[in-house]
Image 1: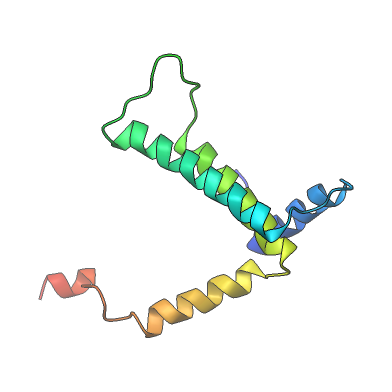
Image 2: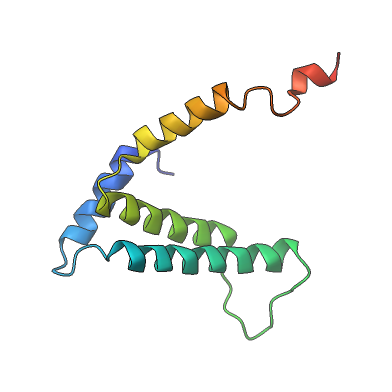
Length: 112
């Protein structure tokens, strides 16, 4: 089990991509790849939790594997645009903890 930080993941992906002459794909190509991976994740979720079971001829993939693929492409996308995902995540959590703090019913409020 790996306990990598986001920065460590971004560095590992960058080291991997840096060994190839082609480098990172363009932003539009990266977005297309991310969309493709999201579609594959949606397909797996639909197989396991939806109304569309897998055909017996279809390759066995897991939701975890598809999330990993999506995370890899998202990390590539962020790296290619020089975006620190740790900083981006901190910003979004600040937004959720301030702007959206009263948007949903908190568990401790249900028992009142």
